[in-house]
Image (cartoon, rainbow, N blue to C red; front, top):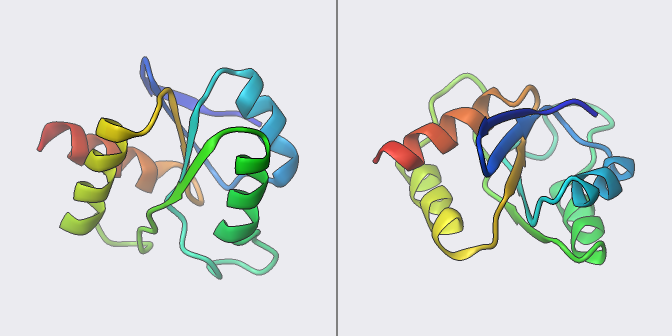
Length: 111
């Protein structure tokens, strides 16, 4: 699994597999953010299944879906700000490519 650090406490990547969760924990992340809506691609794990595995590993999980092809909505930005202000970091966010996760973070930290 490859990921990109876009800030000292925030990294983004494409879709994760359940088998990636131990490596995410080992890398020191505390909160996993799913920015990918369920059902975008056949075979994609649901946010619920990823969330269960993340929580079982002792990490925090939250789903803040961002539709493909459009900028994150103001609700997404507000939810992301809330996460950054209340849940433990560092944060590991994913979507299909990492781009929507990076956009949500950028808008949340600049607003």
